[in-house]
Image 1: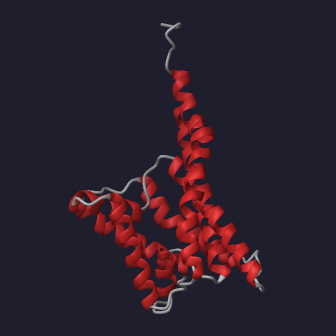
Image 2: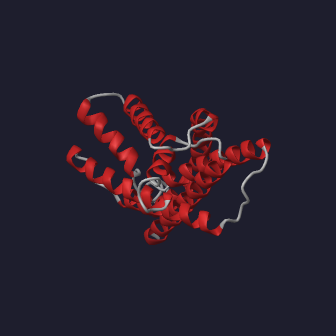
Length: 216
C-alpha cells in the first residue's frame, strides 16, 4: 500500500513538472516577457551553446551546490525538479505543437494560458511532498543563515535573477509584470485544489492502515 502511495507521489510530481515546462513554453512563446528566472535562463543562452532547458538544469545544479554549505540537503524532489523542469521545457519546445502568436490578443492569450498551466504545475509538484526545488531550497537556506524573512529573500532572488537576465538580453516586458502579479493567485488556487483532492489520495492509504477507535 505504501509502495502504491510512493508511486503516486512520483506520478504527481512528474505531471506537475511537465505542466511547468508547458506553462513556461507558453509564456516564452507569448513574446511579452516571462518570469524572472526564465528571463535569466534565456539570457544565458545568448552566451552558452545550450538550450533553455539545459541552462535551467545547469543553474539548478549550481544552486543545489550553493545550498549545501547553508545546511540545505537536497531531497529527491529537488533533483527531479532540477532535471525534469528543463527537460520538459525542451520537450515541449521541440514538439512545437503550438504556433507562435501573430496578434497582440493571441500573445496575451498565450501568456494567460502559460500562467494558469504553470500555476497548476507548481501546485501539483508541491503537493507531491517530495521536497522543494533548487531555488526554493536556496531561499530557505539563506533565510536561516541570514535571519531574513522568506518573503524578503525570495523577492531579492527573483529581482536579482530578473536584473541579471535583463543585462544579458533576457526577454523582459509587460508580460513579466503580469506574470509577477498573476502567478501567485494561480499557484494558490492550484494548491487549494490539490490539497482538497490529491492530498486525500496520498493519505487515504495511511488512514486505512491506522485502526479506528471502534476497531481497537
